[in-house]
Image (cartoon, rainbow, N blue to C red; front, side):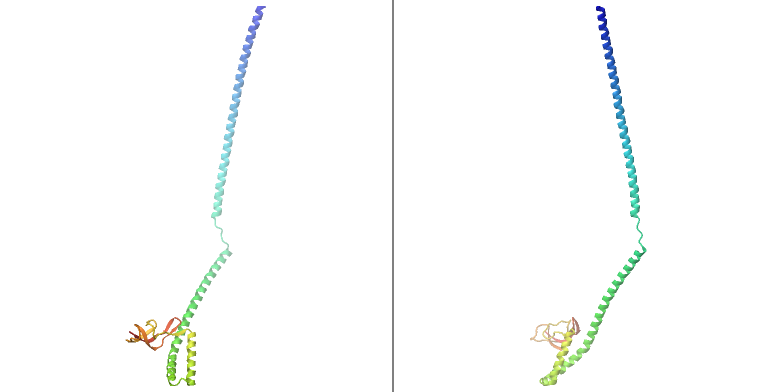
Length: 229
């Protein structure tokens, strides 16, 4: 009885040991399987990431190629000049020709106006030079007649004609040059005589022998004068 109970205890110990060994073996095996499974999943994740990176690189290369082709195509597109239409070229040519002709006409008009003005000036001065001797003789005759009798109606009539003549010349731009009492100016006066006279200052016109005239701002005839001091 006692032996049977001891055997049972020994068997129970052995069985417990065996079960513990089996449990340990199973736990080790499960741990190995779990470790292998985790390693496999990690490898798959790495492979997937590599594939994704490869796909992204391929897409980037395709985009780069497409951009290069697009750039090449854009360069080709923008670099190529559009050929003008013949009608546009003709319009530009006619417009340029018209602009040149208008400029030439404007220059011709200005040159013609300037030449006309110069011709008018030359012609007017020529006529005035021819009239001035008549005016001189008129003044001499009128001065002599006034000494004889100022109340004579004929002389009064001649004075009116003389005033009208001088007014007409003045309205045309002709005016006499100031001489007696003015300072001698070689631009307007022609000194034909010099005299020492205390009644006049230095280089002053003392007497006028022939009246000079201006047409606008140019001298038609210089005054013939006597200069004092």
